[in-house]
Image 1 (spheres, helix red, strand yellow):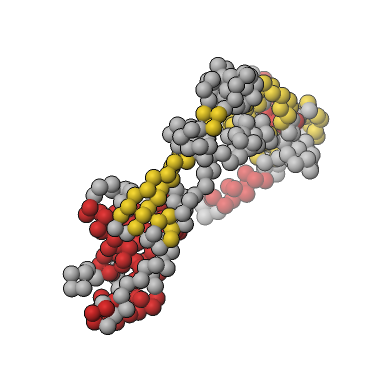
Image 2 (cartoon, helix red, strand yellow; image 1 turned 45 degrees about the vertical axis):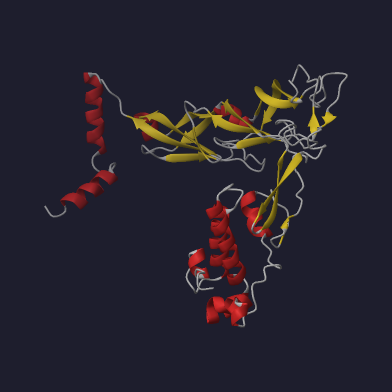
Length: 382
């Protein structure tokens, strides 16, 4: 016992480590020194045995308590100890985590049980993503679009078997149809049995002597598909349309994947969108703003008449309810909000300038309350 290293030192942990830390340390070192990872390396084999011995003690509360009190002497028969007993240790969850299920249940140090292959289980087909660009109006009102994309389909010539017409896949002679081959390795810790996919049939359990010329024995082909899709009214930039079962075909009886349309919306020359509301700016003349007027307002359905009040200031916003974009769920519709900008005339003639001067004189100060208020705030101390 004098030559044995401290078990905490072996696992690289402190004496107060909890169960989680102990298991984590063991998991890392067991994977590092496992004989299958280091074939023929006697030093790794010895360290693997040492790591397992340390874990067997420190993971058991009773053994750990004895070890913490008496050290290695607690298990030395020559000193009255009970000796090591690893027969009931269960390492299956540890090994399974880093061998990906390649091992079955671990029975002490005697070996691993059998594991079942999942290569012939139903596999769902892959989803396919397609980007679709539509106009602003198409997004607002919905539309139908023809799209083209490639998908993996079951070969129509062989029905997905991969074998040429008149022939069929045969049971693999190497793995006898199991899709797996097993190898056994004896180590000082016991017998380890590993399972891996059969290289002859690639884990399918079947071999094809006469492959289908259309799919070259794969059972599947890549084909271009044309499809008419419906885009719902109210869809927005970055949203998706999901078409169930229009992706690639599944394997071994698995369902087809989905087709996912990622929507991109072209910008509009007049309108901007925010949620289900739309916005635009409309220029009006000085006279229309001063006297009030009925102006033409563009909407998604065409222009409508709208009366603005006299004395409208530039930047004033107005709302036409229900003239925005329909909610994509079909419930409710947004508003149209427009802002007016008063256009100041340019390149006035001499006569026009004189008329405006006379107009300003006739207005005096009372018609420009905002200007007068501003001047009073700025120059009140003067």
